[in-house]
Amino acid sequence: MASIAIIDYGMGNLHSIAKAVEHVAGDARVWVSADPDTIRRADRVIFPGVGAIRDCMAELHRLGLDDLLREVARDKPLLGVCLGMQALLDHSEENGGVECLGLIPGQVRRFPGGLTDTASGVRLKIPHMGWNQVHQTAPHPLWSDIPDGSRFYFVHSYYATPADPAHLAGRTEYGLGFAAAVARENLFAVQCHPEKSQHAGLQLLANFVRWNGEVPAHH
Image (cartoon, rainbow, N blue to C red):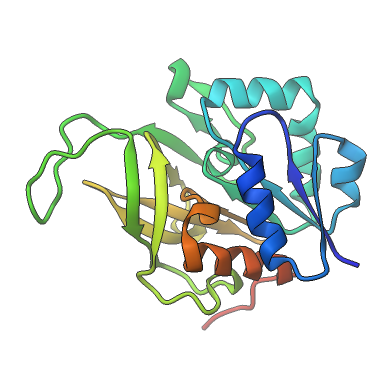
């Protein structure tokens, strides 16, 4: 029987994401755990997160989960969510600059002040909170049955900028274009909260539950 581990390092609304995954998991088992052996045993791993990146990296390091994530990322399907996505990159500007996991090359930057909506000219608040369209920039099994331009729910003040455009899987506009999703081999990560994104978010989680970590070559 398939199993999915949701990494619990004390940062993230794990109850809501666990319930959403259980809802779409069929007969797969869902474990919420900080235990490295449990996470290693799982077929798939979800790495959620909310809060500050410095606290996130400090807790991962304290629990030995930073090295475990690098290990898992070698061969298991891994889904990063929100802060979990940002932590996969090399470095974040938050908290005066924090080194991250370095699994996907790139930087995490703060939204600049004074952003305005390109269509209306209205000043935009930071953090970015609310529903935004995600434009799929590359085909991927996790986009299966999700119409391009579907809306997802976001809450964040920082955004990821992958160094290699080939790692961009989805884009969103909020005063500027930024990465809503990044992908590399068996890794996929989203800035939005799929567990709060109604049908499209549940479909993304359902796709992850079935994903074997492979991305078909597209021509």
